[in-house]
Length: 340
Ligand SMILES: Nc1nc2c(ncn2[C@@H]2O[C@H](COP(=O)(O)OP(=O)(O)OP(=O)(O)O)[C@@H](O)[C@H]2O)c(=O)[nH]1
Image 1 (cartoon, rainbow, N blue to C red):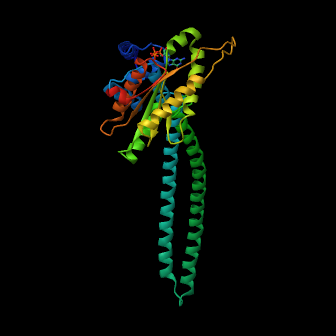
Image 2: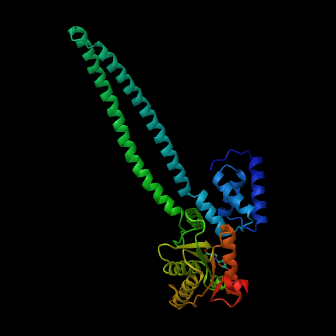
């Protein structure tokens, strides 16, 4: 994030940023402001593309989406990833320079050998000795250059292992929601793309989950307590998802469980188990030691239809979830209810 704008240019960008925030009903707090200022600034290609894509599908911008954009494109982790990418590029350039030099040295050695072979003459000991001496000195030279190449390769190999493990770690971190430890939407998109590329006709069930009357809970007990409850509910939800499935925090107090190769009936049964499991959770205030009210969730179950893109799929699954809310909350609705 480097800015070289004049006062006038910066003021113009600030005004555009404020207008964007207002248009999308976003508070001008530091995270939202930074994300949109960077978007208006236009230097961060990944961030700009992500926002353009959201604008193209008229997706909602809220604090959760903005925090996600910040963590994906502007956070220190993202900058560290960019730095690691730069280090890999530099290392590859160095390696390529060293192998070019080594290749030239080998070619030179081959030329010397060719000439020396021509110089070997059983009837002319002096000429032969001369040729052998040339081969000996060329061999020392090539040995030195090969040793240098080996040192460089060993060093690069070590660097490569360290960089790869740091990149793997960052990649995993980038796929997780920091509050709940569940997967984030970036991971969801990557998994969906992968599943559908592997098998475009694959059956994928989605269970959309939303906490009931959570705004009231936040109002009564505060956002901090709300956060703790949210992460406990998230962990409970994830405990019902086996390895092949994907538990995702898809919004502020919204979750999505993606289940490949699962039919509607089975997904409905899993949803009902999740509902019951969350309903049984008991929360006690760390401060007052009083029992907090029961938390319930509403769930909507749908199956991916190959004719739709995944935006349409997700929007349909959230409509099914709304059906569960309309029907009285703390229950599971399936897409069959939507059709009737
Ligand atoms: N504590 C906490 N609250 C959040 C977070 N993200 C969203 N929320 C809150 O979740 C609440 C969602 O409220 P609404 O969408 O009105 O829904 P609701 O009150 O749960 O009511 P229904 O969904 O209709 O049952 C808002 O108060 C948000 O502030 C978060 O990360 N932490």
